[in-house]
Image 1 (cartoon, helix red, strand yellow):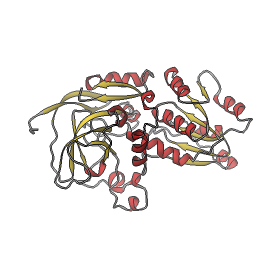
Image 2: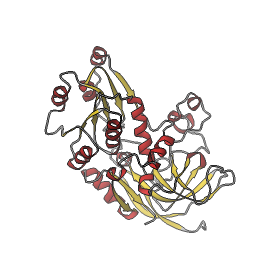
Image 3: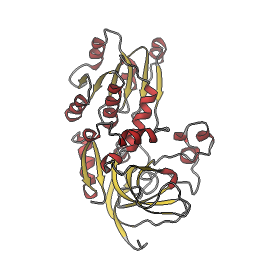
Length: 353
């Protein structure tokens, strides 16, 4: 490919604006660069938060969006050893450097070079702080790339990062067979967690206002699905747990910490997954103390890409029910509208179409 060639790309223009425009096809510039032909991009709630005014998540103006993606390697730099042209790959867009203090302490999702003190030359998060994958081609560093089986469908592989993040939340939750879990929100992560919790032998109550997503939660095994706009969720959970509350509450929406504290039983566990930069709930400290609650925050994935890929390769997750649409790049705004109105669950964009 020649540097003069262009490609159609979805570019963030700030103030809630996303436009399709022609951009140069990226080229290999570093020995560790990998040029990928993008085959699938998951549309994430973070994308919608970036496009809100004011934004609920920071991003850099004029970057190509799209941070959850997969594709096929077209070309690699001279220093790349973990993949070769033709390989199918998933991308960990927030891969830690492996060398800073946080990475060495076992916290790659707090990598100093990536988050706290960005280092010139070390790649930032593509699709948010540098050019991402809502285009036919993308460049990433080799340390972000995971080679995978060619048998995984592209629209499944595109949401590997979503699966890895959900798996991180599941590990924090540490469910036990026979316990009762409440999942707040039946978006993609909430649905994946509903399925994973059921597989662990946990009784699951899922809360969701969208009829479409609530229906899928039932299909994935939720024992009870509650629309909190129609029924009192706290009363329902209290009744279903003989007055005790849930052993485990997972928040997959963003601003519902207080609800979690009310729903959890004495000694219960609360896992906060939903990311909302504008959420500043008042925290009733006495409730946490009186109930002896354990509260866990979950940020991105954490050594969970490999097990997530194994789950995908073995077809152990109901991803065809989680991915509701596969759309071409020129329908990216429609994808956003569908997610905002609840007429979609996980939408994957295929820029090669």
